[in-house]
Image 1 (cartoon, rainbow over the protein chains, first blue to last red):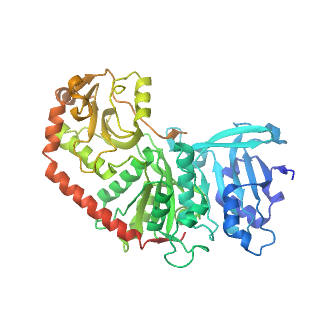
Image 2 (image 1 turned 90 degrees about the horizontal axis):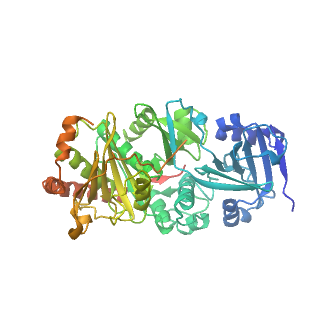
Image 3 (image 1 turned 45 degrees about the vertical axis):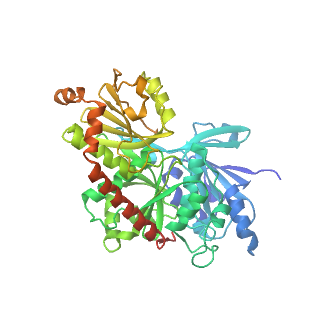
Amino acid sequence: MLKMYIVTENLGETFDKVITSEIRERLGKYLDLTKTFIIEEKYIDRYWREEFSIHYSKTFYKDVDKFTTRVHLIREKISKIDNITEDNYLGYFILRPIPIRSGRISRIIVKPLREIFMLKDNEKLYIPTCEFCIHIAGKEIKFQAFPFYQQDSVVNVCAHADILMVTEYMHRKFHLNKPSISDFISYTLPLCGRSIPSIGLTLEQISIILNQMGYPTIIKFPFVDVDFNEESFNHFIEYIDSYLESGLPTILAIEDHVILIVGHTLGPEGEKDYIVYDDSGAFISEIKGNKMFCNRISRRELKDKVKKVIRNHPHNVALINVEFERMYFPFDSVKRLVEYIITSFFDFMKYVTKKRILISDSNEFKIFCSKNGVDIFNDVPLPHYIWIAELYERKGIICDIIIDASAHKSDIDSWIAIWIGDKVIFNPGYKSKDEFKDCFKVKKFPFVYSNLNDF
Amino acid sequence: MNEKLMKKLEKITADDIKKALEAKLDEWEDYIREVDRRNLKAAKLARNFWVRG
């Protein structure tokens, strides 16, 4: 069967009003930036093939077949598909062939763009991304994106959608196991009724699915047994920040919905807003009044929403995170250990204006340091993952505390090195004694390390 | 970096850090127990938190 491509400037020429308005609602500003659409019919999408096989092939719908429609977004006016380039290509979305408006859009894979989030010149945008590659008209186009997936409300609900987004990203970025909707279904314990049509998932089921797929998962209820105040909200934000800076998005369960926090903006004074993916649009429409699949949510908007929900039900807000396998020393231990070092030892509190905690692959950290002229870590055996706590004073970074991420949660001696100013102090427990010298001048201040792409 | 702070930091050794953390050991162990308790509670709550989207 020959593939059909339609090059058009107007989606309404191909799709009916209902679908066009749904696309406009979910794609939002991306449609404003698009000057040409390339509609690719009979596209084979592997997730739709799974949904079709699991459920839709058994229904009586005459027009629901195994193919999807993929729509490419091009930033320039072009008259033929040969004129697609890596620069003018914005990304694509996929339409399922089902007759339910809210389930038509299946996936949206688009480049993160500053103008979408209305960034000012002095603001930065950080989003963890992975590589996507499309083949069209004899061309291969590669681009970076964070994948969006929308539920169909029968095979998948919001929980499945978020699991798929996280695992698709982790698979592409860190080469972890490839996600499969069939696996989601087979790993779902039918706790309360049938798996399909899905009535939803519990957080425990989400955790079981992720763990069975090889993604270690941690669940936190940040406001249970804790008063809601600035301190507890800060801890909640610090937790999200730490995972984000580590390149690990956070699933936020709030009331009966889950959303994905995938990135953040950064203002000149260190202020942050969060980039949220909402598969159904229910969370975003309440806060922003629109249903665009991704949105920028301010700290204040997040705080107000959380405060409203936990007023009567503190157990209705939870955080779910996937972690790396050898990441055993938990964030809670890192945070407290760093606080001890700051307060009891360095008397830093009056100097430290900001701290940033993230996890890193130790080899990548060594490579990064070497490239920047510091090779002191090269001959130190390090665990696969290390926690890095960066401490800042007003003028910039002053200290890195490097902690063994494979350590026992109760090991207070799990710090590997402390890089203060231009010297690095090593913990004797992490260097062999015969060659041990605990302090080295490196002639450089700690580096700002990042796992995220800056757009 | 602040000069006063710099002078103070110049003298720190690994042994100083080790001793400072050892002094916090009781408090640290209480904290870890509290985190364990909260994690256990989270595991129980996760069973009844349904998301339907």
